[in-house]
Length: 170
Figure 1 (cartoon, rainbow, N blue to C red):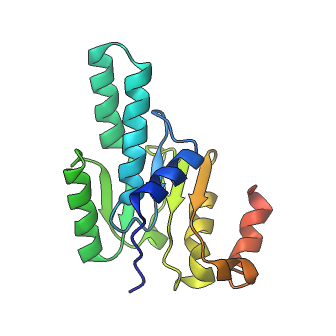
Figure 2 (cartoon, one colour):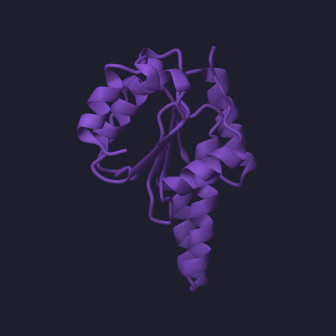
């Protein structure tokens, strides 16, 4: 398979680029080990701790972040288990971690995604840009940070990149 696990400093950098904060709804359509979600959760909890003074309100917010504001989808069962274990080890066992084909997944009103982070499988159509197009088409607002191969910029990401840029800004 072409699962490439993103180093923590890169996933944290990407989540910051996508303007993640305590009110973000963060998702990853090909989450691998869940690294982007762990980084996002850390950023979101830190932001909440800096902005919320009431201990009870802070506890509710952190619980909401972990239970409702993170979403990851992974098709490979063994990698999915790695993501679940990663989230548990990082202090969260209750995120929306789903073992499914993300091409069949549609966001609903319960998850108004505002941040999308991805290191796509580059063997997928358009060098992984099929995931990006699907995700951005489901979002109504927010930011994305996607790691791409250099070959995706030389035309190998077509026709996905052309359609993505027609409806989104870079």
